[in-house]
Length: 190
Image (cartoon, rainbow, N blue to C red; front, side):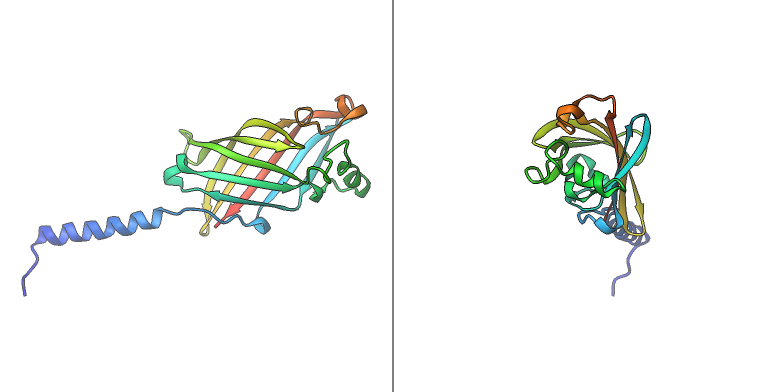
């Protein structure tokens, strides 16, 4: 039996170690876990801060931190799942004046590009947001962390409800319900 020279042993060990290290770091997150995720929003009504939540959403994503530029995401939010902690207000939000959920049951975000920022774990996601048939290109700052074998994406985005015809007729003015709505997300994926 031929003895391996020290250099060959070192080279072999280094190659095996590199292979395992690369495999361990090359995690791609593709399965959104809605039960471990949340989408909330803040808005002002008559100068008072209000909050709401969307209870039902789904999505498809592909994200590898080592290749963020190849990432993609599609997120669909069931607008009828909105909850502002008031049944009457929830029913009103489903009407034609607000979300018009019979005609437009879902809001949709589809990414067009993802860019890693200089700060570790920070990304800029550009995509198309569609609500009530109105489309807007938006830029979403997001932070990514890995926890217990899962990837967690967190961030917030300010949208103008008027740009999506959310609040028509007498509600088109922003004196009672402000135009700015801040959407917060925490999305967990395997």
